[in-house]
Image (cartoon, rainbow, N blue to C red; front, side, top):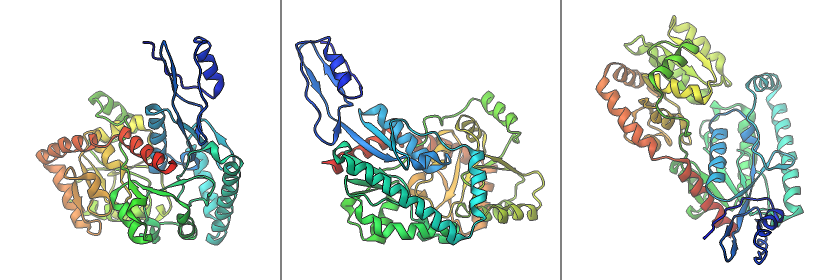
Length: 431
């Protein structure tokens, strides 16, 4: 038996495959599915399988490589490798077959500074106009040939109104409602303007934790059957680094031999003010390394760091690429993640996968993600966090126990599971 799997582009590939077997025939795919498909060729027959055609909003993939962009890139990279799916990436005007590149950090920072100098109302108007433009082109593409796509995956926090094909809307969290003061005003206005109106057009909603699933149902009175929680996972790049690798990366970034670690965008919702207070309270002089983009509101906590007179205890590295971040995780005494609110909290499982003990908040989705493999703290109490820091700095036995538990916990989350469960939702919606 000869078994050949062909991932082609349309009938030209089917014809090319069939030329070697002139007695064989094949049929077209049904509407809503692409002929970019799988062929099972034996010495007697060809069975042509159907491949789901997914249209995804790829604009968030083009942004900073933070939680959402990382989620979408891992999701679609894994989905494409697991199952014969045909993904079209909507870039705001047209569709492409290739995943877009992520944003260049320097160009993003320059653009961000210029936009922030404008009045909030003007920024809101400009961004709303941009989203309406995206929505216009999206509907134009889908109305032209509704059968070309099986499902549309809306990945932006401001969902589009689309009626031509079924929409699955990813909601990552409700921080724009729960913690309005930790976001720029125009972002909150955009979310409130779009979410209520556009949610009614979604055929199904995806969340990244059970906690967010429950919030969606409670906040918007959505029936349970319409919302599915599909957890995220650490990137396969994250696993323990060798001692030599840790030392090399530490030298490259001029990091101390021992340090606590914070990984995330540096913005108010991440509770950096409380972390700084806790560092001042803790009976230890271990340095703190902050890894991540410097988001909005940085002036306040930068001034606070200066006021605490930490001397040489604070390291601000900016963004560190994943291949180096793995070593930074592995070399840390602990990840400190006192965020006020998270839809999932990827750094928690990334750190665990790299044998790094974790301290995180006992609120929102974080207990669900961390399980019993982290020290949970009250994100409103700096003394609680200071005590947790002291334990992990001074208690080797506790630290080693958390490393073992964390490794097992991280292994429970895989992108194969995430992609498979997401694809199951797409298939149900497309039926």
